[in-house]
Length: 252
Length: 171
Image (cartoon, rainbow over all chains, first blue to last red; front, side, top):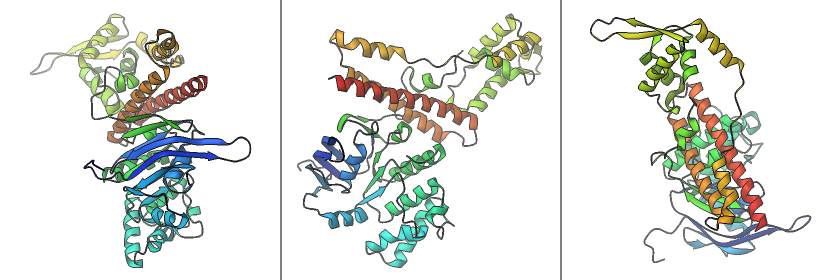
């Protein structure tokens, strides 16, 4: 590229995906171009059924597009097979899901260390990474617990530690607060913001506008297509006439 | 601000500046800081209508300050306030009128209007998130106020989604 900026962490062009299930084929993703640069925090919002989760699955290689291409750090993934994507999901892409997807018969510590070990990290190093992350996420003392013994919010924090243990340049989050109460939602929001402030690139899919507002760019997804792509400036420019104070104003 | 001031005075006599501080402490940074001039004006009106009474208190090195207390009529007004449920919030209808009238003017597109409005709400949502993060964690009242504003915005955003779904189907 002639552009002197570094290649985007993630780029997609012309992505298409149709689901063939029972009934009529569902066109979940209908021509999506997307570019995510290093350090960006992008939220993709839209009504349920708009295809946003499918889009995220395509970006993480969990599903393959019918058409279109994806580049990671400028490298085309067109030739990637299942195994290669699995490697990328260990090294370059961390993913958190709505239902945590922890391994239920492994302890919290093992859940977090496993991807590090699979990526070739030494056991000693994996342990150090795990300890640091669990401490950071307020889970010290839960190492020997099994996922089923934890609250939803705690399980999602373990999932976040697992996703980040190999320091992937890109974090994908699919409705990470979708099965949490509002306290858990705030917690996830606070943590994503914190990692983002340290430079983590994040792509978040959510229908929760509160969660989306933690991002600095919000893509509205409708019917398989990007309807709007907006940078949020909230907090850097003073609110205009009504804005925030209008929402909060207690009437005379 | 009349009734909130009466409610603060139900606890005991206070002067204008104390009331301003009480309000700030109660509502935290979430609430647009009450203007002390506005508080004095409101107190003057409340006194005129007999809901409170002021008494000048001499201060050694400064001008007298006026300490207000609630009258029986004021207590009654407050009781009536608590007994009445409040009106439900209104749909922000100015935006809706734009949306409804845009097609026949040929001057704006409905989907662009929705996108523009969504950006506005999302930016406000972001400001609220920042406000919530900066607010003292223990101030439950302030957090509830912010959360209420966020839930209203969430509902407005959901409604924009509905508008967009419907209108795109028509295209």
